Structures are given as C-alpha cells and as structure tokens.
Length: 462
Image 1 (cartoon, rainbow, N blue to C red):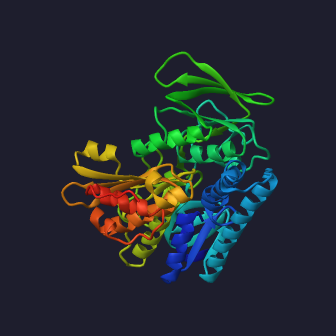
Image 2 (image 1 turned 30 degrees about the vertical axis):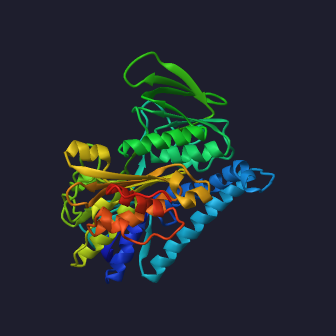
Image 3 (image 1 turned 120 degrees about the vertical axis):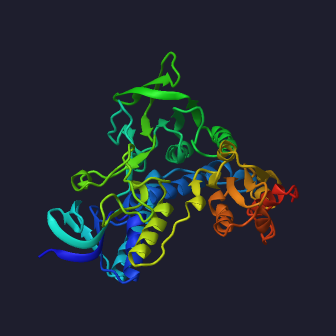
C-alpha cells in the first residue's frame, strides 16, 4: 500500500523546505523528495551559502594583505586554502543539519531519492509509490551550458566546481558578467588569480541600473579584474595545464586567442526539471523551459504546483521561500501573497550591490515621470571612518506621489541597507517617509536617508 500525504514537495531547497515547514505548521502531513542526503538544495549545498562563506573569507584575506597597514596593524599574511575550504564546508554542514532538525521538529518526512510524477496525486521515489493530495515542484535550477564548451568541473567549471578548487589558479576566465560570475571571480581574484571576465553584452550585470553597473565595473577593475565586453567564447580546448579559448566579438570581427588555467562558465541558470515526468502528465512549459503557473502557482495540471527557479521570475532563494510560504497558505485555505515589486537582488562582491524595484532605464522606457535622489559614501561619516568610500545610494520616486519606485545601492553592507527601502516600499511608502525615519549616527544607513532627502533636494553633507 502506498504511503499517503497531504502534500509532497519535490526539492528541498529554500522554496521546498520553507514551504514544507509552513505547510506542516498549518496541520498538513508533508513529505519532501530530495535526492541529496543533505537537505537545503543547491543554495545551501553548492550555491548561496558556500559561495558567501568563501566571499567572506577571501575578503578578510584581501584586507589583511592590503588594508591592515593603514590602520597601524603589522602582520605576516599567509593563505591556507585548505583551512578556508574546511571552514566553508563547516558552514554548509551546520546549516544543512539545521534544516534536518527543523524537519524533525515539524514532523516532515525526508523522502530520499529521485521523484517522478506519474499522475496528479501520485509520485514515485526511486520506484516507491507515494500518494498525495497535492504535488509541488521545487526542483530549482542548474547552470546553463555554453554551446561548444564541455564542463568537466576540473579545468572548465560551473559555480559548483569553482567552490571546490584545490589550489588558486594562476589565471581564470569567467564567462558571464552576472551575479555568480562576478562573485566567484572576486573570490579567486582576491586569493591571487588573474581574472578576466568575458561578457556577450556591452555591459556587466544585465538588468541592473546602468549607473550602478558602471560604478561596479570601475571598482572591480581597481581590484584587478579585467573585462572583455561585447565578446563571446566560440571554442574551448583543454590542454595539459590550461584551456585555450577562442574569443569573438559579439557583433562580428576577427577572433582572438585567450588562455587560462581555469575557466568558469557562468552565463546563467535554467530550470532543473529533468526526469520529473512533466511531459507525460501534461505539465506545460514556456519556450525557455520554465513551468507555466497561474496566480496560485498551479500548473496546467490541477493538483500539481510549481515554485522557485522552476517558474518565471527572479531566480533568488528568498523569492522561492516566499512562494513556498504563500502556496502552503493557499492550500490551507488562507490568502497567501507575494509582492514581486519588492524582491531585492544582491551581488555579494565588495563593495556589495543591492537593488529593489525599477531602474531608471525601466522607468524611462515605461514613460513614468520620476524624481531621483543620490548620496555618495564619500560624504558618509561611517564610510569615512571605516575607509569604505566607494559607491552611492540612489532612490527613485514617483514625480507626482513621491511613492518609492526603486532603490539601488553600491557600497559596504549594501545588502543589509536595502531592506530599509524594501520595508517602506512594501507599505507603499514615499521617499519622504524614509527621509523622516530615524537613522542612527554614524551608520552607513544614513546614506539611505540622505538619498531619500535628495529626492526633494534636501540632502546634507555629513
């Protein structure tokens, strides 16, 4: 007799495990199918968490190597990459064990194995039949392959392989100037690799506010990263000690040769839905492979739902989490909701970049009249004290109502600062609301307030 659940979720990443916990809290019997022995999905195991651990460690190394002297600190600095990797693995282990504890606490079953949907209400896990009232696909995403380039996770790696390198490569080519490429390129650049970023478009971080992107590129160039924009990798040949690349201009022209000890392919991610049996049961997907869902996250097949990276929208862990919670509440008869206008995006380089809402380019294209306010960290007291003066805060507000439409920050701890704006936007607040809120002195967050004041022409130099 098949085991029976109220809800079976396929995938134990942020969307799957957070949605499972919320469903269990609402009284459902929940099983989560995950082929990994460890819970947490790509994010906790080979994505968000280990990359941020390495970013933090590598930034400490860079600061010790180049920044201590001006503070009157003399130190002999030596890199122990094995220890750095060990710490990273320890962080992953602690957090995945934490998810396992939450499953046990909330009486959620971890169904280890590969899940295949046989019909609405029926899933097989490595051949074992499972019955359920509802099925949620939360299988996340995988690295998008680059045509003509074969990944071996040794010389040519994805972000997964870039997290496991046994030694610092002398040189690295990063293909793709998005969030992942810039973050992992920063890690290995700080640790001593000569990093070149190749990007098909004529700018980095596509979709980001253009002014922020230009500033980020300037800062990263100062840190030693080189950029080949408007270029594409046409071929890659793995040799004994390096990879020989053929680089072609995106708009045509003579190719050039480029070689590196390691090549990181980071041109984006695509939904991971392999082996789920979607075509057999009639689950519709769009041209890019994303699962089509309605406003309640239901697919074209009643009783089968999808969230996170498997469906259209920002491919971010926190977006998946909110969808998991909203769907669990909907299935329980409540009014789950996700406000996609306030999903923040963060690039964990140093300085960090954080953004929410619309960019200037998007507002202009939509014909929306807006006011902008900007404030630099060169005039921020905490930035001066900490010698973190790169970057600025930009806030965009409706020209008529003053309602905040977007905010874009490049600077130290931008990823934390953005949430003050997210909260105001969530309640439909205005730039004046943000400007009149207390911001303690001296803090980086004062730059957010000053940018809000600047929307009305009232910024002060502090």
